[in-house]
Length: 164
Image 1 (cartoon, rainbow, N blue to C red):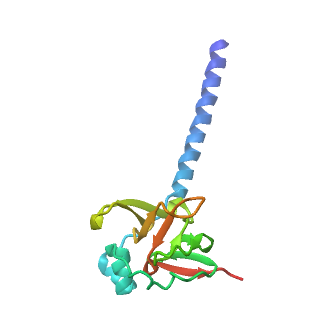
Image 2: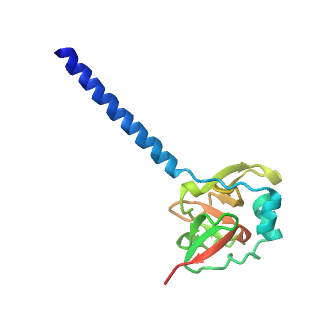
Image 3: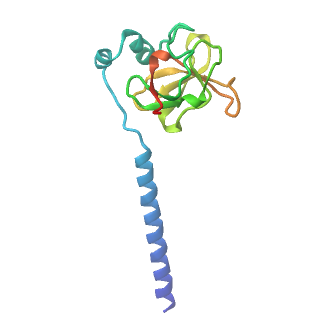
């Protein structure tokens, strides 16, 4: 009798653990982003030469020349390559750096960060997690509460205005 009770309890514990594990794996799968991969030739067909230079070759536009540097309408900024949502206008501020600046990203899953030691400096590169487009860099000199400044190329983003 005692062993059948222990067996039953162990069986139920195993079933609960298995269901919890399966649910956890399913939640992880739904949070994954479907990656977009294209050849450079395919990207050139859908991007302007400057967009290609910035997003696919990790280039940068000249400071104070981007269309979103002094742009402050309400809405959402998306990746120019794959249309993934990246930043909200309520996190955009005038940093004076010459590029659009954001104090935070829309979601951790939409942005990937990468160490960048090009040009004789060490910086943190900001990339789109869905299509791996170079967006810009993030610096630790931004406003509270994050203390971050996402310095993003206008050529790497598009804007969707907030519906009124």
